[in-house]
Length: 198
Image 1 (cartoon, rainbow, N blue to C red):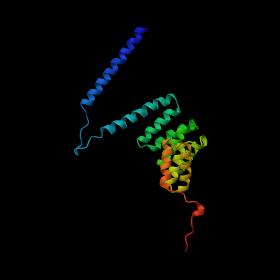
Image 2 (image 1 turned 45 degrees about the vertical axis):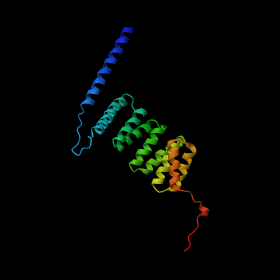
Image 3 (image 1 turned 135 degrees about the vertical axis):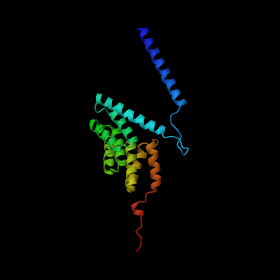
């Protein structure tokens, strides 16, 4: 039994050494060439795209084994979004949130992608679902504030950002909300506003 274990470890070590050597050789003889303008090649970007495509295919195989598996669907959505395929990302996220209606991360991500596809109403709806699950979710509070600030509803933005700062001032979203509040400027109380004279 111990010999089989040692043989397996040796085989893994040999395989790792071979992969390492192949990696070094490919780095020594790069196939990418410099463009005529002198700028570097786009090979790294193409490699990253190829890697993401490969990961999506591998995840698709896993999804067949575990249909509606939230972590797989979330990762597939993230990859699709990174590749600029937001409609595909929305499909994965809708599948995720249908399979797991209480998946906060899925609703947050779906709200963000919907906003990026100019579906503001859908983005607000999905982000509000997060707040129904957890009214103090700082990321959802910040996101709603940002949505409302971007559609020129500063008072709603102020309300959500204030709540985000109160929920978790030390988090990234809490700090971003504080920055957003500073950009909105001080709130003028309704009773302090003067009616201009004609």
